[in-house]
Length: 104
Image (tube, rainbow, N blue to C red; front, top):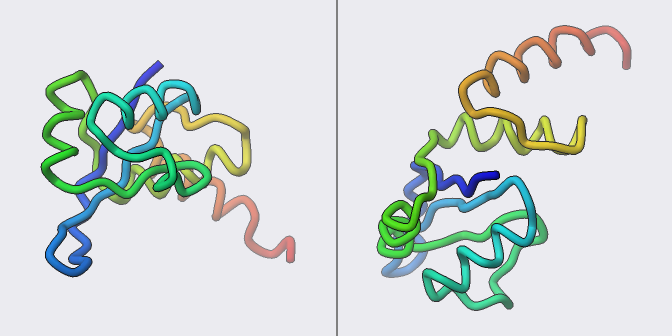
C-alpha cells in the first residue's frame, strides 16, 4: 500500500498545490494527518496539498509520480476499483480509451 504525490503545480493565491492520492482511504488520511493537512480539505478521493506538505509526505515515504500518472491511476480506480501501479498507468489508460472507442 502506498501514498502518491504528483508534480502538478497549480497556483492558488500564494500557494502552489499538487495532488496526494493513496491505495486506501485510511492511508491517505493517515498521511494527511502526518503532514498537517486538515481533514475538511479531503476532496472525496484525494487531497490538494501545498508543495511544503508534499516535501513532508515524500520524507515520510510517499512516492513521487507525474500528474499524468496520477490522472491515469484515478481513471483506473474509477473503472476497476483500484489505483494500480504508476509505472503502467498511462499505458493502461491509453489501452482502455482505445478499447472503448466506438462503443458509445
